[in-house]
Amino acid sequence: MPHNGLRHPLFRSAWSALLLGVISAGGFAPLGAFPLLLLAVTGLLALWRGQNPKRAAWLGFVFGLGQFLAGVSWLYVALHDVGGMPMPLSALAIFLFCCVLAVFPMLAGWLVGRFANAGDATCDALRYALVAASAWLLTEWLRSWVLTGFPWLSLGYAHVLPSPLAGFAPISGVHGVSALSVLWSATFLFVMQERKWPWALGFVGLPVLGYVLSWVSWTAPIGEPFSVRLVQTNIPQTLKWQPELLPRWLEKNLRLANQGEAVLTVLPETTLPLLEDDLPENYMASMREYARGHEGDVVLGMFVREDTGAIHNAALSQGTNGEQRYAKAHLVPFGEYVPPAFDWVFKWLNMPMSDQMPGAANQPLMKFGQQRVAVNICYESVFGNEIAARAGDATLLLNMSNLAWYGHSSAQPQHLQIAQMRALETGRPLLQATNTGATAVVDAQGRVTAELPSFADGALLAQVRGTQGLTPYVRWGNTPVVVLAIVGLWWGCRRRARVG
Image (cartoon, rainbow, N blue to C red; front, side):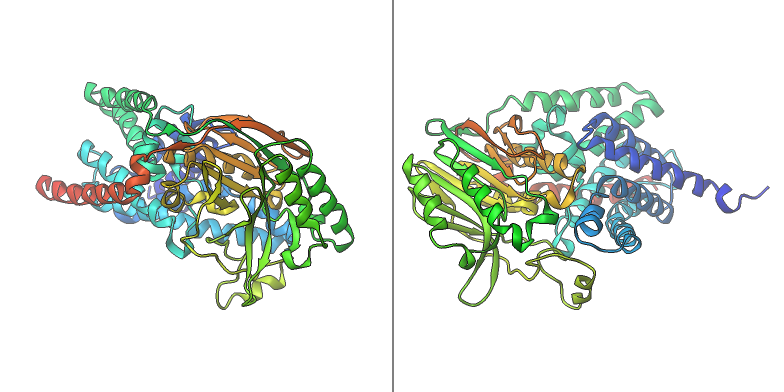
């Protein structure tokens, strides 16, 4: 009897791929169960094996759709709950966005079907493993910059500590760890399918090597430990821009900033919901005097307007080391600026300050005594290559965020997981000051050493010591792993030709 409709084997495989994609999201925060990701990718590789390019591409798309629907559905909160977009339109927008993101694992599937498979399940195992890892790396790297990039849920983020693959991050960066994650899944697949001891050796040896590498110190401490206060203001996004509540928010920021002493006090992104020019008289002077009173500095997020009229989402410092500024360089499309021909989107959204301009790419570091701080704002934290480009001269990373847009969702823990990867890649401690959470300190080994409870007012007081030196990833960026992935695909193509 011929198969037809949903009884066709390809549709049954598609349902499996969709389920595996949903399961893979459990590898990321808040659950953070990286073995689930290992098993899910193993299942995908089993589905891909022996498929022609079109079928492998379709399975990759469905897997990606399941993963992104389960992993970034928190965007619905920003569009509907906060932005005011109607529910059906919000749901449709999220679905279409996830479909676009799923194109990249679809491309990975096509590459596997084209260069790794020989048309049946007996294809060469070594070629299959290397081509699959290379294809995933290249397509994930493309996703990090095509159309300004959205590298959220890169597989490597699931492999911060306690994953044994975390030790590879200072060498390969998140995309290299993603490829190693796929390679690890491939070894597990062939242990189960072929039961040959070399694959078992690879399955055990890869995490053991990662664990050994985690003991390597790529950077060294510099200067003495110093005190930091990370302020969490906990202002609801739905109330933040109401004019009648503005005096309350200004008073709250000033009060929390002045409670306790520290060499460096940091308030969140856009913690003052108005332009610098519109601040009450002497407001910034009060911040400055507080900081100077204990020979320190305060950094706070707010909007600034240039003489040209351009508005920036910026970080400003006041205090002993004078006024310093950083303007956010990598803006959020449809949130902080509108791409050409898409002005109509904002008819449905209530997003203040959505006409911003990016800051320069080569802005100077902030300097506080011996410490040189590379600031990034919210969404910028997800772009590892951009952070690494500024980290070489820095002793410390600072992220200022406002995740109130996403409510009580997985966005907060996922954002902290991304911060852990940035600390691992650069060998730098990272401070993260947020409006509603997660406000935390991450050490140079990617461990969260202190964290405030989310959705609560407060300030996190900690001792931090900067580091100096270059990890291989800071030195070389993504170039080596991208080149290796291209070579891997080329080798797979040549090896397939010889086998054929």
